[in-house]
Image (cartoon, rainbow, N blue to C red; front, side):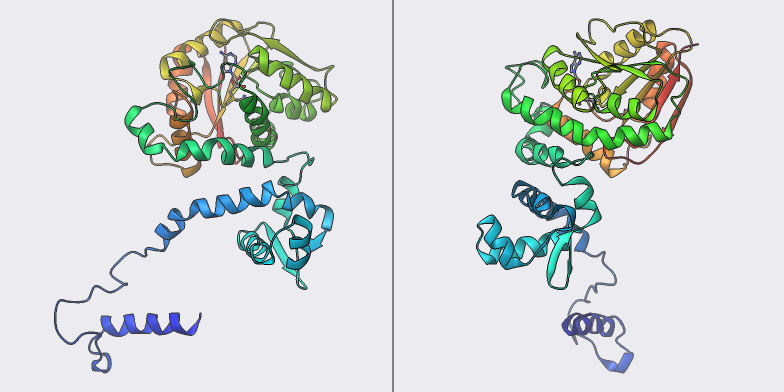
Length: 372
Ligand SMILES: C[S@@+](CC[C@H](N)C(=O)[O-])C[C@H]1O[C@@H](n2cnc3c(N)ncnc32)[C@H](O)[C@@H]1O
């Protein structure tokens, strides 16, 4: 501990024990409230500056720092300044900041990627997470800047609810370029965790309802050799999924189907997946959607709801609770609890309902129901 911090800690102790050597910080006047009687304000500093950490990550990613350092490459401050065309002062700050956040490590005077940044922040890697970093920076950050407004209006801030009926409507080029890439980043690793936590080997045909980029279908088909899948989504999204499926070399096993899940759900599948769908919508629409899924499934079929589940007491956990606030600025939905989903599944006719917990960026569990 630095000397001045040590000294401050000692002074606090002396004030708390006036008898010890007869020393107090103040001889008279109101009693001193010592730091031992108060909670520390340090967590508030961490909360207040959370966006400093995020913006450091976002700027480093925008500068392609982690891709620059891919595959064991390393750099000094001067070399990075030269390579990125930066003044050495901000180059030093960026490298120091990234090292402090666990995104870089320093050995022998040179900075290099940590296992975390190497696995997830290098462009082209299979579980590249940069798409989500970019969306958080370019889309969500501004929307969260108006969070207090959303609390009062109960309306999203990332798009104009008077001009369109949901964030998914239309073909806004920025949205097309960032949103589904971000979902793919978020979902690829989550799909793998789901496929490990839930045994899907008895199912043959997966319908990924609102399947987006097809990340779940790609990962689950890689994990389960007998599985075939359909990504069911809006017409302008199916093209994005088809590109990802072709890239993964799985066009023979994964197809796309277009339509609205508010109108109909295609038949011919024994497993339905709803990943990050129900948190987009209000309760009545979700309950109707679950009834539609029940009708479309054969007897013996199952539904899997994968989400960041809020606990039944509504006190956390933080990733789910904050995703719920993210739904305030983006949608009409919220992050629901396992008990809520279980009740809706039961009402729709599903039985043997259970929740399986796991740890992933886009889900902490899956609520599963079977059609008798
Ligand atoms: C939050 S994203 C989730 C994507 C994917 N399930 C995942 O977890 O990566 C929601 C998806 O629902 C799709 N969607 C929204 N409204 C829809 C509708 N009425 N019918 C079908 N898909 C819809 C969107 O296009 C988007 O791909």
